[in-house]
Length: 267
Image 1 (cartoon, rainbow, N blue to C red):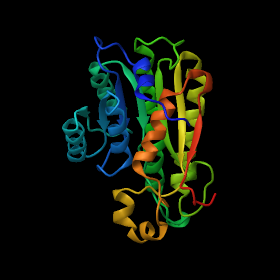
Image 2: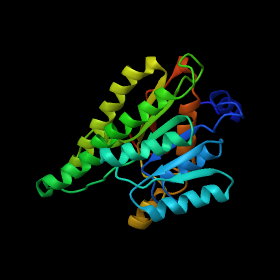
Image 3: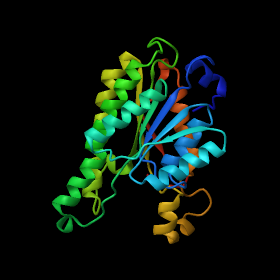
């Protein structure tokens, strides 16, 4: 995708006399994680970013980093699989200004051989990705459809993005629970894209095909980081840039699904 300057963002944003557009990111954890990188990218374009995740301390740390860099950030801790909690957060998000971007980045990466996989583990993976994606999408769409932007503008009302994985395309052990949950999220994104695209909401699903060079992988599998070599893992800022480019796409050429992988990742 071609690099777009901040001019495109200005076209999609309200005038300077209006409140800043809002980007709501669910699934924000450590600073060296994808959720935080997405928040920093949209904050750098003048968005007020709303951060949702399970750990208040991590959210506060990411919000503080963004504000120290001159951005606006608000931390709203909650469980994406709780309808009541996400509904409450959605009301706070909409009070910040016009919701323009919503990103669902939450997941529960359960890993176990199938006969050792418990019903509880399978259910937790489904609750986080599939049910959580539905609850978040439900609330986010209400906000996007209520913002003041015209559906027939170049960037329409806004963008709803879902973080997917290779497992959404093909299941294999020991990821039966994760694959089933991510496949459900992918199907949900397709349904929402077909229903709400004509109403001016760009819905896209991003397949992350490869390891992400972040805190989770560096802490849990340092040997994989070393083996990957230069640019063998997806860089956080590079992923975040692709999400930004999805948001600024002209409505005549919207992407519904985007694969992101390192240049030497087999596929």
